[in-house]
Amino acid sequence: MSYPQLAAAACSGAASAADLAAQRQLSALRAMERGRGCKGDGGGGLFNACRDLSVRIAEVQRQISAGLAARSCSEPSATTQRSARLDRPKVTPAAVTSNATEKPKSWAGKGALTYCVRLSDGYLFPAPHSQFDKTESTTETLAQCRFICQNESVDLYVLNDVNGETADMISATSGKSYAELPTAYNYHESSDFKKCDWAGYVAKVSELRASSRSARAMRNVVMPMPDSRPSRNADMVDTVATATFAPLTDRKVRVVGPAFIFDQGIAPETVQQ
Image (cartoon, rainbow, N blue to C red; front, top):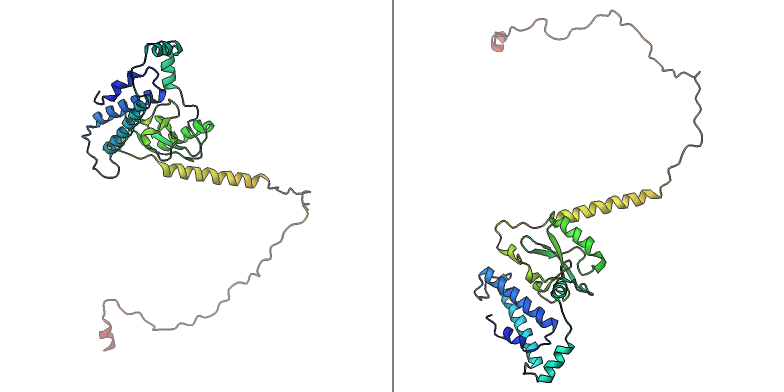
């Protein structure tokens, strides 16, 4: 590996799980860096994926260096080696695989942020009610994320440290970090990138809330029913008053105006002459 201290991590037979996780994370970040063709430059604007990767790699390297320094990596004595071999529990490959994919016990602490992540291109955005979700609401929140994106290939990630990087997010279903996702940050370079329909989700929620309020408002409404049927008298007939009919009389009609009609072919000037 390009980072020589990774090889020295084997100097301690009692390497902690945090050190092993840091090494795996560093390998994943290096693979992402090679895949993106990053050259170590830090330019490119505010949302530069290569710069984010380089910062995260430096942090992981410092973490590994601190772990190695804490263990001092000195050559242990033969007695210490025998004691370590006796005290070390036996771990089968099946157990290693199970621990690698095991979900964290407390993945959403107080104030943890939840993110919807589209697995096809790594596109991420805060989940509904982020920072207020609980472990038991994982299924509901994941369903909301999939509805917003209209896609089943969406996962829910949790960032326990609100000041941490998005690469540190942990999947609520697989327990793996966002940095280990093969398509992490790919949406930055996608030419046909399309956001998920957050506005459509908000409109749908507002519609459902309005209908729910209407149903609750009508729940306690009492519609009065008539006590008795109104009486009807078949002998009564409605009569309609009619106007008195009077025939027209033969009377002369007074005619006002000229007694003749002008010929349409004669101009008015000729008639005046």
